[in-house]
Image (tube, rainbow, N blue to C red; front, side, top):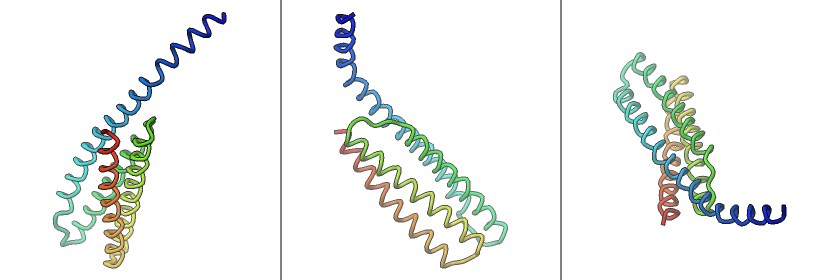
Amino acid sequence: MRLTLAVGLAVASLLVPSAAQASDASLKSTVKKELKTLAKAEKRYRTAVKTVDSDAELGKAKTATEKLSTAVDRFHDKIQAEQADSADLKDAQDKILDASETYSKGLDKLVAAIDAKSKAKVKSALKTIAKANKKFYSAGKAFGEAGS
């Protein structure tokens, strides 16, 4: 019984580092995959809101913004579901989660601004989205440094 417990603990201690590497690799893989998916959603969004000259196009822009917000929320949830084991990747994960939350908040503000047909609210929403862009840049740098 003691020998089995000792052998089990020894084997477990050997497996812990590889488990940490596996979950870090999984996080990196998920981020890479989900960023590609998010980029596609943003491309569809840019196409949908290229010109907004009429009320009908404004409605389409609102719908496209809501769809992009849903894609950002899905991105956030997938990244949040991953477990980072190394401290550097945990920090990078936290940064990308914060960036996606800010982006989602900005898109929600944009939908509200479209509903209100308020240029001032649009301006505020775009500032929030710009902050998210800076946060994504910082998160990308953190992921790059964590991968070293």
